[in-house]
Amino acid sequence: MLVLPTEMNVLKVHRIEGTATYLTKVIMMSNRGSRLLKLFAIAACAVLAATGFWTYQRYQARSNTPLLDEVIERAKHTSLDDRQAWLQLARQALAAEHVQPIAPPSDPVNNRGNTPRAELGRLLFFDPILSGDRRTSCASCHHPDYGMADGLRRAVGAGGRGIGPARAGTGPELQRNTPSLFNAAYNNLHFWDGSAGTLEEQALAPIFAENEMNQSSAVELIRRLRAIPEYRERFAAGFGFETPPDGRDITLPNIARAIAAFERKLTLMETNYDRFVAGRDDQLTTEQTRGLLVFFGAGQCAACHTPPLFHDGGLSAIGVPASAEKGAPLDTDPGFGAIIHRADSFGMFKTPTLRNVSRTAPYMHNGVFATLEEVVDFYNDGGGRGRGLKVPNQDFKVSKLNLTDQQKRDLVSFLKALDDLIPAPLLPASLPSGLPVGGSR
Ligand code: HEC
Ligand code: HEC
View 1 (cartoon, rainbow, N blue to C red):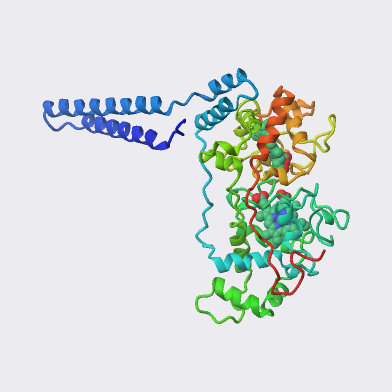
View 2 (view 1 turned 60 degrees about the horizontal axis):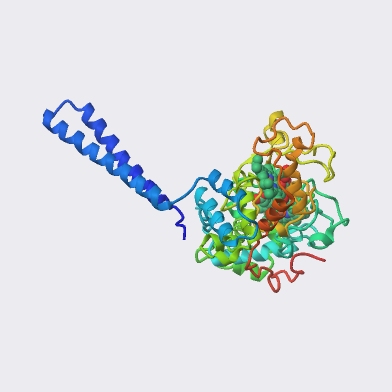
């Protein structure tokens, strides 16, 4: 079996090299000491350098890692159902790209989310008491049944009724598609246009936004929560330092911290793909191993949707159209361009994660594509520019791909290997406010 290269060996070499360079510098700059001593030190450096070179050679030989280009070339000559060969190619592609396993997100210093705090956040998240009319909760749009999104093209805002797709047509449409909150804890940019900072900063915004939860008064929000004994106790347990449960810990910053602490628990780290990375060959179908090769190779997807998070933390313009059919005009949302007021950043959006992507249709900031097949067709055409639209700042990594139908199917199949295998039970049985969990239906 192929060994995934560890960074350890490389580090070792760097350290040896570093020491040798440092010593050489010291020797050359010093004008003290005898000539013999210098000669001796130079010899020592030479030995160190040779050791570094030798370690590197040994590492190269042992890791047996072909370059990605070589792997892609081999894939071209591999028969479609030679499972063993595809498994090996998939592992070689991961090794060539130095793919690492996913690790849990870290808590920020101002919000070391203990369990009572995250549990409180969960209740607040599902409690419509936060909204002006007591009917909408965060979960009205970010619901576990719809991958912590809503399944709608664009979110339905304040005044809308129901949860997820049931909200369609019941209220004003917001400007953009609702993103999943799974793994949002890993995002350094929030919102499609990257305009929101931390989860803590973001959490209060939808509560007070007129078109989302329409809570008009902070005083009213605090008053409502302080009136409920269970919230008083839970805030004291989550934030108080031996303070009495009299409601003094119920403040706006603490509401934000509790919600963010809950959101950081919405991690998604166990997928067939992750199990495969951990060494279990049986977790990917042959089709999916072929798809993995397209993802890293011909499709160039990994260039932006970089594992293990399946995003690169950046923004780019790919030329998303206003509607799905070919010949449709470019979407008019300026995205990041409106944030920094620059025309050359028009239509730049955040690279979304692809974890759980099969469960969060429709796709893109405007929800324009209904299926993954449509998304893959769009990329295969070369994005907006490939479809004949004028997208001056389209990212060069999105260009015509010429994938075969087989490759397209394999790619979609691989994306499904990124689905969460152990969905956490998130819905609370009841809420301290006594209102319906997740908002009124
Ligand atoms: C009416 C529907 C709706 C409600 C209610 C709602 N959201 Fe959202 N949420 C959205 C939409 C739409 C976006 C994308 C906005 C954008 O990118 O411009 C979003 C984005 C987010 C993001 C950014 C995710 C990322 O990484 O980009 C977070 C976090 C979030 N919401 C949390 C919450 C919380 C917490 C609540 C409750 C306090 C809430 N939302 C209530 C629709 C909603
Ligand atoms: C240049 C970087 C880049 C490359 C290369 C790229 N993507 Fe994307 N991807 C993005 C950005 C940016 C978005 C969001 C665009 C928007 O909403 O306007 C996106 C969105 C998506 C979405 C929608 C996700 C959602 O939740 O709505 C899918 C699916 C997707 N990409 C798959 C792929 C596949 C498959 C490939 C390879 C064929 C690929 N991407 C290549 C940057 C990239």
